[in-house]
Image 1 (cartoon, rainbow, N blue to C red):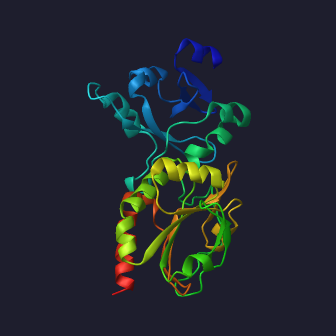
Image 2 (image 1 turned 180 degrees about the vertical axis):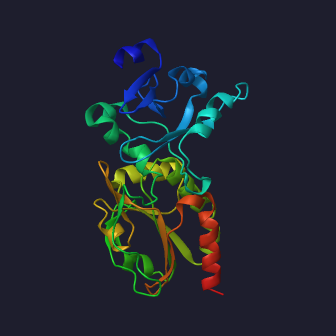
Image 3 (image 1 turned 60 degrees about the vertical axis):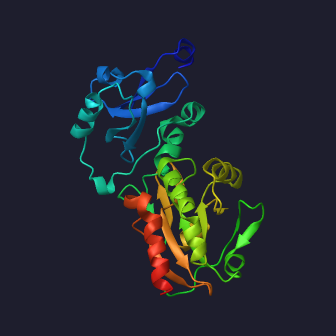
Length: 291
């Protein structure tokens, strides 16, 4: 792979029953099943190889290709054909994956370890290959208490968040810098003024360490708090912990509205299929709660 990088070429790497296309920088751009001819992996210029990938768990036996960006001068037919012939995944349950896996992780941890960032950030629908944590708390009960490291540089508890008399939109997400998590965070940020008008604050929770969350917050321009739930203990208390074989424990993509008196007043568990519009439905729920 080092020689490939020095020569500035792309390289096809066999992975179990799939092939990965590695860029000169050592990133995996997408994975294709072995039934797909390798020649079709090189039909686009390097500048157009900004792709996302859906990889089935746990044996990587399923994959489809979805172009994220194509140059205007390049026809898209060559990439759309493999996607159509791939294993069926409905649009409602086909999450988007961030292309890009760090080469160091790939070499030191193997593909499954190196793919964790791309995999966990979006594939949070519970399947037979994944094990959800505790049951989701019912609406109307006291929200589980917690104290977690925050992007403010100090631990924050639920009591700290509610003492200002605001509604708290506590949203759990799998991993920073992944595609769907970035879309979701930016959507909340886009609507931040509307939340303030409704006396509500946004608080994000993931298993990432605080320094990574701080970088994510800065890069995305987020004006709300992120909490580091390393080990997913709080995620488990909220029924949002997700165990993925070989990859570890993460936060499932779920959202909870907590009232100023600390009660769970609204729970959203079907978020993955509508990440872009999720903030809108949360705002509507807040309006209904205050009507």
